Image (tube, rainbow, N blue to C red; front, top):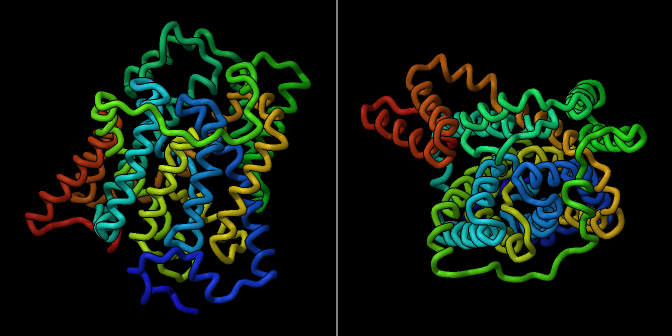
Length: 426
């Protein structure tokens, strides 16, 4: 089996390569099973990420359906699965808070165009030069920020005002709101997280997140628990995709959201190529980085046109896809089809899902996202530790972009002294 090295530079979707090699009914069966498995994982996760980002849950599903289909159909990785990612929660929430939904959609659209341009300019290979300590640092920082953002829903807390965006003011507001703690919500959220961890330990092949959310929804409805649900907060999910349309575009809004779009672009490029690299390591194949960035860009444009949030390659769903026996990009396409079927057939059931249960899902995501062992290992190496802590600290104290820029600057200064740190490619 070729590892794809000879064609890694081509602008040719892996879907076409798969079809040229021959595609059989047996291959389709494998892809259908893998696609269904990934859809079961993506369903609660996409809604949880959307709610945590400050937008209605259906916008996460729109992104997973439209963006996921385009990433797999056009991408440069045979097994990459695209959709909304936890790493974007902080950026999306801040953008919605500052510019509203239309500002968010414009930022996602612009980032899609920029990602496509970066891919066409063959800059994909340069993304791999981002130091490893930077990626570990900002991933750890994002995990902690997301965890903090879920404490309100996890405990059913009632804040006296709007929840602050910055990390430290947020913690202060949450501490002040502790007297409003809802024991039922806390039990539902923590119970969901515990169920997921236990299933992952004892029955790793089972869809732990979906099982936890279904159980929490059933218990909440049967026992009439006093907890907020998707229905009480957002109403029923729509039962179809919206018609595509351009977001509101004005020169003033364009320049206001452009820095945000650049942040989306940087994070999307790094996340998607890291995910593709993980897939390469699991399968022995080689992705086409520039084709992958073009696909990610088109997927974000598509998501924005259908009202979805930002899209990137997702490591957890991609790994699930591979472990489930996927043969080709059709698995990712079918995952999007299965999610669409849920929206068309079973969307009304989502109104019973407790928001605390979705917060519990994201607690697990945060735990898995943070590379804890690698963080500790890098702390033992003085130069890598400087880069790591600069990235981690600025991500918490300021924002993700500041953390990445600071980490790369520190790494650059260390490289000038002849004592550089490892990049993602080596």
